[in-house]
Length: 105
Image (cartoon, rainbow, N blue to C red; front, side, top):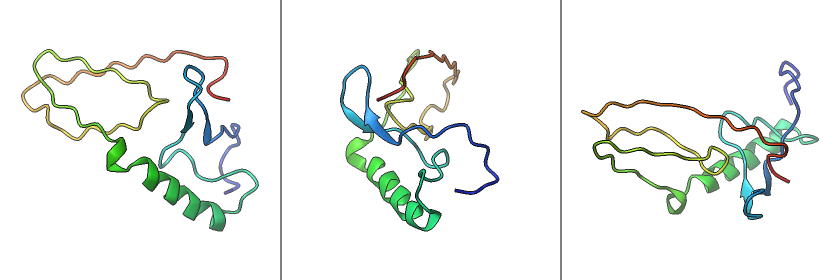
């Protein structure tokens, strides 16, 4: 792990979702930079493999915008990216954060 990063704790990359108990990966490219007790040379290829697995087409949803539409999601449950398709419509974003005692087990 690069020593120039401030240690704010190491959340688990994999775990069970608290609401469903289903296993999942909790991390995305750019936010997870390594694994505790694993050197960068070993962690890098594993991270790439996990990110490639997460972004498979079978896990993707492409939204088709319509007038007056509202879309909501839980950031713990998906990776999201704005890819357009809303030309001619106002795009307003509102973020709500809900605190939890335990993110996942």
